[in-house]
Image (cartoon, rainbow, N blue to C red):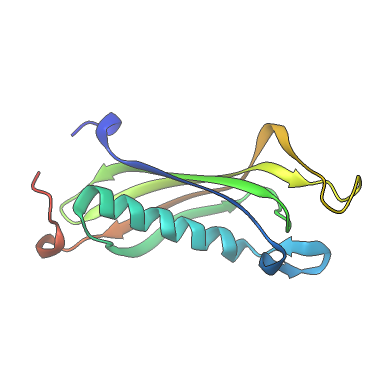
Length: 134
């Protein structure tokens, strides 16, 4: 299977007030890692028919802050496959934001997305859990 044929996944969502953890409505970085966890689970399901187990992060970079009211788009893709391991790359982008400076309910999408996180991680799917023959 070529790299172009390996699965990818995407999640798009709005961060709510319940996601604010720090002063100024700042969202904790752990929120982005939870989303990456959901992406890697979907990737394992698409490739193996099993949720797999997130084994390790190779790298995580928090590149820009997120706040309650921000809209994000998170993407992940499998970039290489071993016997039981699947190495994946992830990116989270801020695509929209609340504009409380205009009114309580004002919001807008950004002209250019802002990358807020890049990460690389590996999931493992035991051989006897891999349901799709290769």
